[in-house]
Length: 152
View 1 (cartoon, rainbow, N blue to C red):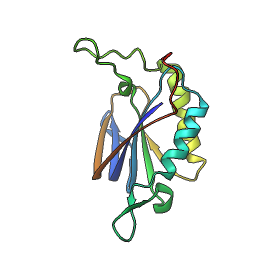
View 2 (view 1 turned 180 degrees about the vertical axis):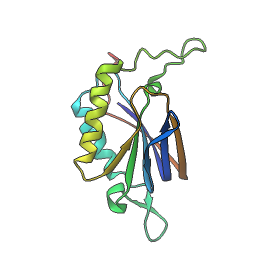
View 3 (view 1 turned 90 degrees about the vertical axis):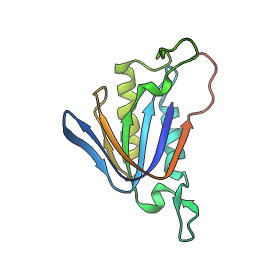
């Protein structure tokens, strides 16, 4: 499981000209799954994400978490995070989990976040989305679930 996390002042996602999700202060999280991901990967990354200290404290030091600032999450599914560009110029997405299976984990991911009393807004899985991100900092962090065997 792979996340691209961006600290945001405000962000939104639009599908077919309609805003389907928006947040003020918080995180935009691009989410992708690979074949061997399970609920354990989700639980690991939810815990890591919610405790990630990337928000400024009173002294301007990144020392606060999303929980500390009562921030929100804009969660966007993005299978292209598992693009493989090692051969040629056209990315291969063979490492990305297929749609129906990925949708189940994506829904579980969002539900697990909400269980921690976090406001979670989302895009629409599989849709062509326009994501507007006001990246604060800019702060962008990549998180991955535990190291796995190279069976992916």
